[in-house]
Image: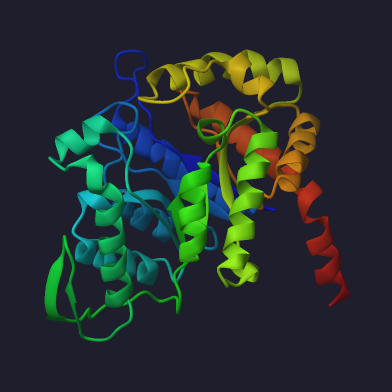
Length: 339
C-alpha cells in the first residue's frame, strides 16, 4: 500500500486565529516532514469562494513544495476542468512536472459544488461533456506534436507546447467513486480516486464499487497493472484510541459541518461506517487492512482538517510513518534485502 497526505485547506478565520498564509506554511512543513519520513505522495485540493477550501491554485503551492522536497510525489486532487482553459492546465502542470523532476500526480474532475459553478458562470448541466473535451485537449498538448482541436467547447488551431512534462506518461486520476461515475472512468481506462464516506455508506459498499470498476476496466481491455486507486480518509493517530478521539473528534465534526455537500454526517456516523482512521497505531493498521482488502492500494490520509493544530498533525504524521506504514512495507523490505 502507498501512503499519502491529502489536504483540503479548510480554514476558519472566525474560529481559529490562523490566516491562509499560516495554513499554507504549515502544510508545506507537513509536506517536508512527510517527505523525510518516506511517505509516497502528498495531495492538495483546489477550491474556490469558501472557507471549505482556500487553496485556489494548487500548482503554485506544489511548485514551492517541489523545491523543498526530494522524493515525495506531488499531487493535485483535483483540477476542475470545466472552470479552466485546458491549454493553461497543460502548460501549468507540465512546468510543475519539470520543476519537481517528474513527480507530478494529476487528479482531474468535473466539479460538484454549485457555488463554484455559479462563481465561474459555468453551466453545470453539461460539465461531463465539457470535461471530456478539455481532457482531449490536454492529451493532444502533451503529445509534443503541433495540433488542432475543434470540439464543442474548445477550439485551437496549429499550436504546440514548448515545455512538456518530464515524465513520459503523467499518471492521471479522475475523481469518481460513485458506481455510475466509476464505471464511466473504467471504460475510459483511467484510475479513479475519491473520498470514502462521500461515495459509500460502508466499507462493504466501497468494496463493491471498486470491484465493479475493476471488472469493467478489465472488460474494456485496459492494463490492470496500471491500476492505482487512492482513497481519502480522515486520519489521526495517537498513542491510544482515547487520546486520538479526544483530540480529533471536534475537528472532524467541524470539517463535516463546513463541507458544502454530503450526508450530514458526524464523527460517530463515519466511525460506524469504518470511514475513519482515528485511534492507536494498532487500531489504524487493523482498519487499513480492511481498506486493502476492499481494493484500496493508495491511502490519502486527510490529517490536516477542521483546524487541527499543526503540532498534533506533525505527531500523527510521525506515528503513522514509524508504527503504521511498516506493517504494509514488510514485503517490500524483504524483496530489497534479497536483492
